[in-house]
Image (cartoon, rainbow, N blue to C red):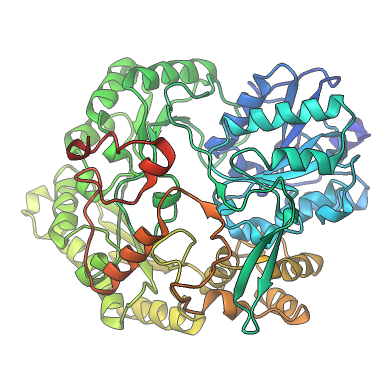
Length: 619
């Protein structure tokens, strides 16, 4: 039991103690004598976790169940970890201050591969054994969901159970099943066997990987009769009927995204070949405008936020965007509540709407051409011409914008140095669009911030078979580009290749990585996604000590016939479709947006049972 008074005194010595106190407006406190206690664990600092929409949805969803109390727990920063270990303070839920061992479930959301060591560290700080096999009936069940679960294997020794897909319906089913088992005398193995029968549940202990002599997977064996050979992701068919919170927790300190979030739709029709989210979140399912307006009213009323963010993978593709934005502006413009569209594409921008949105709060514009040459944009199926990039940029300049962010990737499949230099050329053309106008129209101080991330091949994309660039190749491309960009109006930055290399290792790895992950944590790896905390040498030593070859997972070109570590998961999109898209990329052939005509990915037929509802010629 945590001594709360002692904890309060100790918190005065750490950075941002408000990360660890709880008691925020709209947080939920229930009687501890409740059937199920669930710790929603976000493996990063409070400010990052509290900006995650999924946390707020699932937190309030579970707390809407009478027999469930969901609390939050975040990764303590290094100063807090030091304090906790020095004073024998176990990691606790923010709402009750009870230690993690008091809970029935500890549920992690896995948003980023480089958070995995934080998962281990949080379990250890909570007094919970790292490995599933070491946890008996009296230890909380450790479960995980989120986008990284589309390849769960690197955490197979750690997590008892994975939820694959959208959780709003699956989690209540799982919790109700647990409650039945608990009332009958809980047995962990029996519960896992029953849970494995639910669609979307993966229990890694019920499977075994068999490898060939060359290290490639030969086959996966099912070890338990209750386990399914293929795990089909769960999907919400009707977003207008699914749970969405009427309130969100108000933090005491600034967080990354401090605003009302309205989720317009899920899925994407664009088909960018590098984008995992664009594949695994298919098909597109939109909310009705009236649903969104009601949700906005509830959330604004309960939080007092002065900004409403309209989010999705590509907000400009929402079919009722003009109607929705104008309704929200009419409702809130006089209250100085701004409306933001954080994920627009260049070819979906409606500048008359954006101009009105900016009357409340002006901000810079962010464009994501992704590649500097048309050749590479065709490879990745970006479906953007140079004219479609520069036209909206010029319009934005004419409307008064002078700060532009440009997002690119380097290391894309088939890329040559000419393509890399195309990033510079495109940034310079954007600059020219600003200064080639009449002098009387030029206002503001132009700033172009170009940045490049290092391409990471991800599961369930057409590029899942592709070898990642080596770190030397990434550095050569990035530093050459940095050297060549000499204009003071254009700044350039790039993502650390060593981080991207490790991200690829864990994104495409199998369960043999588990030992290296645990060893890296044991040697002090924490907050690997934070560059000032990232220690690449410790990781390399961990791989060496566990006889693990990371290049095998990141830098190896996969055969199309190879058994991939994640092949047992069914996202609805056919593997044949991904292969077809990969082959199109090799021939620089594009595939149109599937809103314009079905591209036969298979997802609607496999998951919804009918044709894509938004494709007119496929009805």
